[in-house]
Image 1 (cartoon, one colour):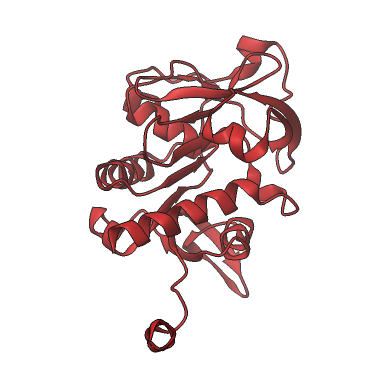
Image 2 (cartoon, helix red, strand yellow):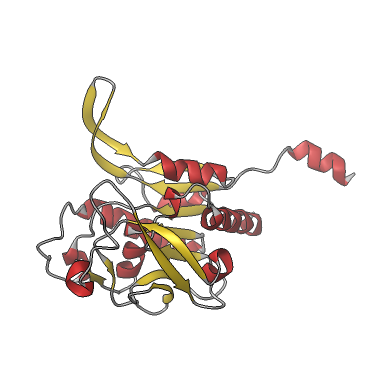
Length: 248
């Protein structure tokens, strides 16, 4: 009987993952126009990890979209707008998108309220931090005296990170791992209830997460850039699947 019920229901639905997007001028074919877009490596990482990617432009979507999502992925992108976290802009802070900041903060708040799993990548980890009351270092070379976290435009560097034992991140990537990176800003004050769960050799916070039963992780690096190591995306999509099963 159980077999017949399973067959009637058909295959299990893959977790639906909402990806925030850029809203920028882009080119394709003969066109050069404003577009809502996301780098394909994010889509590939979600798909290869068993999820269904759904793109969430920063216009026309609101908190209600969480009703059809099983996970929220806050992707990378432009610097956050400093007035949005009570700071004056550094001379090196550029290309801010306050409308996108506001949109993603609303989505994050709704996800946290529902208990929906969240993964923040680079800017996403920064947005997660400031949305909960934290702050950023706006230009790391001023603080660290090197540009190792933010190499030349259009390229990624590599950073070794060490995780905190017992954290979600440690359980996924191990005690120490080498990761792709590209950012000139970084996490400064990590607000409660977030906790820092990984750091680079220079002491910079590289991962944050929420303790407790929820699956909420932000990483300063770019895991989507290493398609040979999908452990973080696989763990995120799996958490989204478990959350959907619990809620259904």
